[in-house]
Length: 588
Image: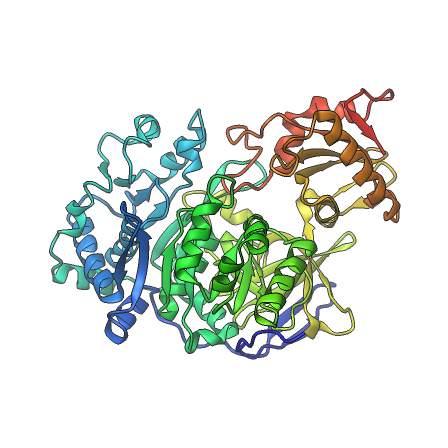
């Protein structure tokens, strides 16, 4: 089947072997030139395409309020002057508590022009958390001098808990204190002092402990990473990205990749206030009908939420595919059934398929590091290192640990030197913690596939390794759409077991007995396809108690923290392995 044409840049790699068993993979193409600062691109596009929409957002009446590149540049300069007039600095950075909006974007870029670090913080730490533990930890690391929260009323409890007494609070109602300040030559002088090593932003990510770490993002990181993306997705030279995107800017995918991709290539970002949830997806559909993006980026859950509207609204489907060139997913692996249905709708609507694209990276890598080519046809494949990226493969047990070195890798963690030292090996490669496998061991040009998180893998009592990532992905694909997620247990046990978190929407209307019977059948069918104890789930339990962000069981983006869940729910795990299973345990 024909795929809608998208122009890619060239990429191939060279593989070398070291005497210690490590392998090194490098692109055969050099990384192209990139600016000293990402914000140089705002100046570029304000001069070249001053009237093109840069940022857009729904206003109270439902229409789109916009900022063109020229308008944004003027406002950003004014914000930068306002920040220079205030007691904010590297020691007292700018912090944003609320989500994506135009004012947030202008504050971010204004801080960069002023050479002052900016730190966006997950809204969940303010609006979902009840003890504000993570928020207190973050504010203790940052010591912010200015805090932006669009709606002071919504954030009042969090602000009362963490706002320093000497920090200024800015809201959407008081934003004019910044934007109405007249820029002077002081902004140009401050901007001239900013170098590629200047800290542009601090992004917080939670590791296995759930305690946020502040990942330092320099100007070099941001600019070089966007040049890496452009070197692969070369079509943006003639067709700048038009995005309708909800991904939060406190995450590297939404804040670095998506926001930066638009800015670097002179595109337009329409801020989607919807979400891939029962209460938010209708808003997203309305926005997509208006915007008709040429690239649609989302997490796998977002693509799943889109499917009912592609099935049931022919008018929406026609608009959605009218100029779409690419699906782009990140954050987790997309299931093959979702992938296949998206392509079926594309074939029926436009007579050709839409390229499904992804990559692999992390907050610490900018994020983009590995990219597939335009012949990607299977979920899980992540491609080759981009120009400028060096990939090191280290044998660990039966797997290949991936480590990365490039100009877009973070220099470390904000005010946490011990974590910084532990994150890099003796050659300066960042230890990302993921494993890769060759798609074809005889042909490195076919790229790599994701092979799970090393920290999550474990051994059974028999000494058999369980690769948790692939097993989890296999379970979710088989149990789609009824399983929201699953946690795998079995460390030093005889068998693999699972805690199943059902998808409430898909199981709506079923009794608990019917849900149990459904998963019993699904697990039995999955067991037939298993090849041994390492990928056979012997027992399972359905968990209905909600996950807790305060107990580090779930991140603000919805990802499960397997280690925290197993620790917090140790009683359930013991119940799974009891000699006489309780009625709650499904024995496969």
